[in-house]
Length: 452
Image (tube, rainbow, N blue to C red; front, top):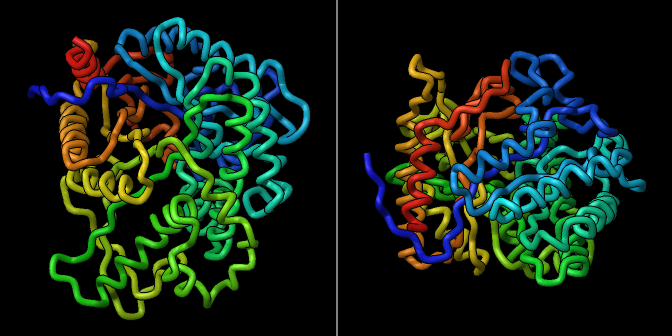
């Protein structure tokens, strides 16, 4: 299987990770518990009672992991900073050992010719702040601004690519309404409130980044999903698609890039909230101009209208999710390069900015073979298909500047624990041995050919 699609000059090739998923060392050097440490402690929340320790032991093995990135030929590496490692009390005193880890990581990346893309928040909120209401407390915008100022003032002399939040949909609706992620609440209104406060914190942080890092490229990463209805939709089906799209996409596209929530979302949620959490001036703060948009995408969503159905997402009356179309990944997610193309085009239209694909990948039940290799043809095929979709989106007018494979290596897959493997590098969790999978070798070949 060959792949010879050519991308524009200057296109960045990278891989991505997140702090809680790879670092381990959850009590080392003054780090305090995050909401994910707490979530993992509750029976039934995470497969096999897995926790964030030891994960990939990246906190101790970081220099070797950077060498691995260089061997793969990566142009860029997207990672996140752990708030409870940097400011264990949530606000106030900075932990020198915590910020030093990320400073050393940045230095190692730059010494190896790899551009750091830093995400400030990838879901590991300090538990002490959740005790004060977490994302339901409006004051979190100020806590996040203080944290942002701390990190950017320490790293902004060397880092120019900054992302405020990773997938605020997951930090809000998946975490406060659907209950699948920390802190595990199941309240339709709480998800809306958390989403608003996440965006408010984002907008409050944008000028802090610009002040502390002149010349910074400031971004947010969303995880939009293309919503499809039945092949021959009724008007009711089209309404179901709109309702799902509002709760999955419009809730963020609207405030961030158009300075307003979708009217249909406000109307369809008026029965459960008066939206008093939206204050005068909030949308102006939230829609602070950005330099690019990060897009994480793995699969499309399919819905139809069913009389009497109530999807748990806000405004989900009459909405029923339908089965994904095969083939599926080990996560049960639909493999759809077309859906990837379509949501990239939609995202470009909504934001009017350059786009980086900050996550894309697939999970498969990988094993090390007798020959010592990890043969993962399904992941390689997924990579090829989705890169073709990216190139098609570029040809169709989307300004896409780079692609980050999810993930650099197998890691803690949130509520699925260590049962799902997304890496282009295999991790033996008993020995922490890294083995580049066939897909990783293919990704390295694609990168080398592009630069050749």
